[in-house]
Figure 1: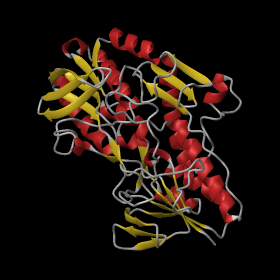
Figure 2: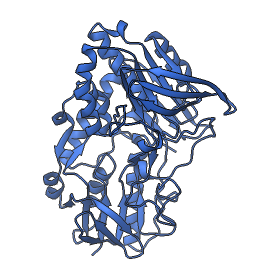
Figure 3: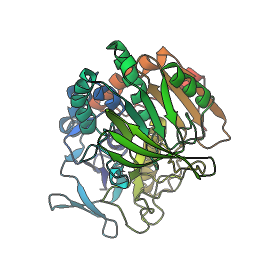
Figure 4: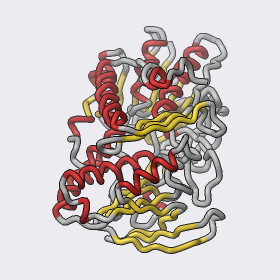
Length: 423
């Protein structure tokens, strides 16, 4: 009997548990360890932050759904991974031994790297977690009663730019519906070298389409921007040129701000030699397996992926929906093969695919592979994306409650593009 432990129960960890349970034998044990009792659908956080969703709409207790499928669940969280002992130290002082470990924790949010950043003692909001989105949710109504300038975007080292764009346009849509958009100057501040870079070197005509959308919505932007400090109602930003040299300093007043932080690895793994790199992300090979600790695998945002290109201000590479889905399948297949005494050879594609909602419209992109030159380099916009994102939200939450590991992107987006298989 093998014990497979999965740390994390988000959009990577929970599907991994279901898929693993279906794949391994009845005598094998699958355990999920999380630091909370609930599943939260993170892609809906930008909607929640402007009161388009309530917590109950995108969160549900997950213990009963996991246990119904024969998956053990522990909600005390992991304090430290001890890979040399194949053991986890939990926050409640207990320990759990494992034969195989899947790390799907997501990131630690590095608000502390910019003075005054973040919702915990800082002056900016966040949509990275549901708790953060709910804090904005509570503040948004007060802001709309006394509107003023908005600064929104992503700081240096950020690697997931999509939610920043989503939130900027969702705020614009909400303000227009309230008929107060004319009272809210909006500036998008980003470490990207140009609008629509997305940490991917651009996808299709993302630059032209995104710039046009921002001009149409009267959103100004500052690229190659390093956020140096945030005070109450004021953000200090240094703009750089294409060589990385300082170009201009900005002092941006705001009545409301949401800035995505840089990501790091979580404390439970940070600094473990051979398991993580300098930022604490898990080192994996093309089979999602750590080269030093070969019974440890990782999926999702916690995985170390180098930037697709050097940029004047540091930017990271996003881990989008299909990429995570592909990592899950590869990890499950390779663990199952290893348990059978075979060499696991399934590779995750690491292609980038995303649906980004803009409130009443949206954009979708596909980058195959994520690093140029690409076999598919597709970017599109339209109201259909907004509807597709709503459909995806409902589908994914229902899938998690049902206990299904059915892939979404293979069956839906690929069919839409007329692609039979990703390579």
